[in-house]
Image (cartoon, rainbow, N blue to C red):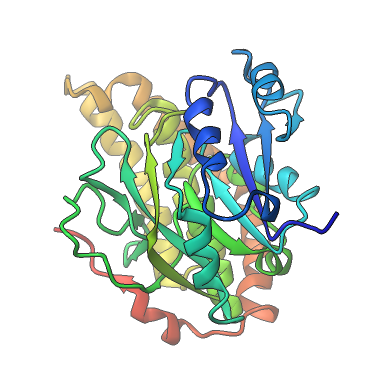
Length: 328
């Protein structure tokens, strides 16, 4: 049997409640079923996810892991048996509209220099509101989603270049992932997409946004937005990604910013600040993020020599056009 054109990889952790809608949407893709395969990588779920997928979708390949290895390594493990020329990553809490794969692949096939496609991602609970139309890189090192929480009024209906695609729903060339060595498994969860975009951009790859490749997304369905776990990974990984990839000033600014946010979080806790996101659990998450950052910093700086040295093909000057002003 011929290899499929696209391999769709879904990393799942206790997402049984999302999987019927997610996998069901892939069955309704306009792309002929023989042209794509679906791979579910399960991070040792305890909610019956593996058993349900095997029974409800026997054609789906399931990789059942014995531990939770995170989003980054989960996708890398899913990539090993994948046979597609193109690799589609879809969150387990996302629902793809029928034209998603067809439109993304059509965009990729326009040019072999195009590394990947960003989808139009809307919020599942309110599809009138945008979740992402591609990644934005701010001058302070933060990554963001273009159009985040904006009402979809047709302002993003033009296909254009973006810094990178949001990891909730992206389609990239297998060649790009092989060139970069996949995702950085140290990140575990969050900022893997921005890290991939940085490394790809430094290697000369480009990314386009396809407004006709539409997905609905729950957003933070696994970790919970602004939970202590969310804060730990976002804060730590933002600093790590910049130390690996960004110009020196941006890398330094992001690293210092992490420690300033630790001090601010604990000052507000000590001062009796009663906001939910700044309770003691969140202060501890910030402190743990800083400690983990310091532990991983030597290996990231070693990688920086390779990424920004011998492997790079594009200068910071050329990439500066993507550096967006920090929102006021």
